[in-house]
Image 1 (cartoon, rainbow, N blue to C red):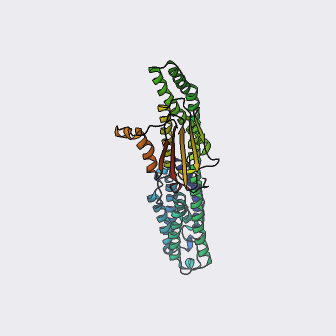
Image 2 (cartoon, rainbow, N blue to C red; image 1 turned 135 degrees about the horizontal axis):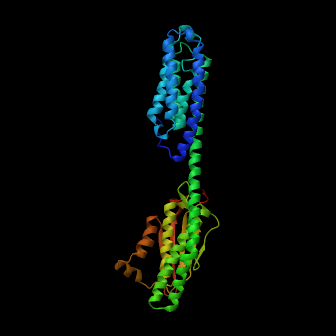
Image 3 (cartoon, one colour; image 1 turned 60 degrees about the horizontal axis):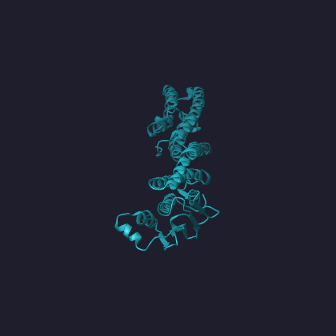
Length: 393
């Protein structure tokens, strides 16, 4: 009946609280219905049937109070049956009451009790479920009236208004609770990552740095071991710093975008200098991740081919319609034909990890190099694949 997916834990907590409040309201309006019908039962054409209706409403109120307290039972069958009971009680009114009662627009048998099934639908499924339920109950109310007056229309209007407001408010509170729980989980995860980052920085990164330096001093096989340790230090440092930058810059936003400035800043190490714009540069998360992955590959090539202590520079430019990321070093450069021979030999680091990734983003990767001139990769991605300049979430 609601058409909504099963609520998550946070929504369950909100709904449980609201349904318990509804249970109290159901007792109050049931008491009113019992007292009201007790004062006028002598006017009924069929008083026995009237008391059977009131008794069933009391029994059903007890059943629903129990049923709605478990989130697993708050589904369309129970909600639909609840509304059906209200509609049936209203439709039995002409049979129970006398013509004189109907002529003076006396309250129907359930009276205000009919609002409880309507509000139950609103709590479970929002206004989109509450308003249709109110329409169905109101249609039954109209069908039992010989003629209509302002009181009838006023009651219908209030029922529809209550369904809409309660449904909207329930959805708003449920979504806010879910957002708060997500924020709390994210804060806890970031705190744990920060703790692990401190542990890694105080232990693993220092050891890797020591191995790199000692290997370089000893030379031979130890130098190769030091180079590998340097590569892992760069990768691990980038991962650790990436968590911190995500926390500071809101790396992933609700609209599926990410701040490329924060992600590129995470590439900075003792050998890598980063220059970025002052503001945010937001692009889809997958675009940011691919660009950062390409930059990491370029920096890994610098450490591999120039040296673990070789300086490198990363420059990010937002040109409005395009975003350009440049990665530069001051090494010996790439000899002519070397990349082509590497591709023929099956080594696809440049052709796939760099050019292939950027090409898949609809951009281009241009290589500027020459003997003794170092290497500069210019990675250009069209802004049309991301957000317009100045759109900051």
